[in-house]
Length: 296
Image 1 (tube, rainbow, N blue to C red):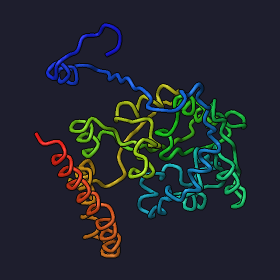
Image 2 (cartoon, rainbow, N blue to C red):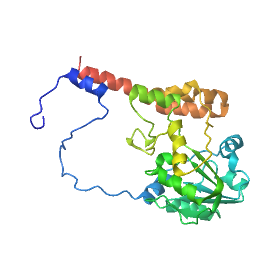
Image 3 (cartoon, rainbow, N blue to C red):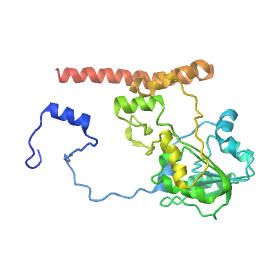
Image 4 (cartoon, one colour):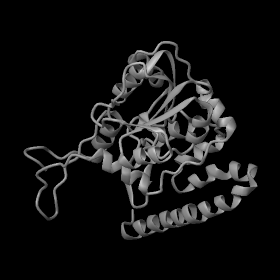
């Protein structure tokens, strides 16, 4: 106990868990010197490593998905892809259907990839979210699954507003924190979908640091200065999505896709075998061992 604090019983602790809006923790190091500084993260190097890991490769969008999400940009003049990364998902389709495609990102790897493909490349200032171009340069812009990664997303939204011409179009996407699975995860487990790269090795290095409801997603462009705003969904969800918050049983959420797309059945079996069975058995064995060592 620290200072003169008096001990509290278990009932007091449980009541605090239910009513307190914040947690506190006191940690005493077991060994080794105490850290005296926190190094500033190099954002450019972080995202170069992020792409080099190979863990963030999105499949190419089907034509139907592309038109559903980025349809308003088809036929535009110059279009900026803000936070384009290595051009997965929609870059090829978008570059084909606009007069001039350019990308923007923070890391040298992404910028080098743009230049190799013959596209315009703009470096995003990691501190300010800005790019080096004049006001009203672009007719349209997209920011696909980027805002949830940013420290100051309003700053970036304002920059997109600045580089667009009057009447320009921004088509942006973010994960929907209000979907069934994430609502249940927040309700039942008090967790958010931070999307860690390798949860078995490190469950705390999640790359998602912002979470959006419909209301907050609408407020972002409005606060950045945009006018006419519409919002909708584009990814098909099913009731099976609720299984994503079920820990080792989350592989069940892939079942409908595996049935509807026979080609992906083998992928489902691999996922089921590698993720579900080891996790489930490991969890059961761990629980059994825990009860054995600490009987009630």
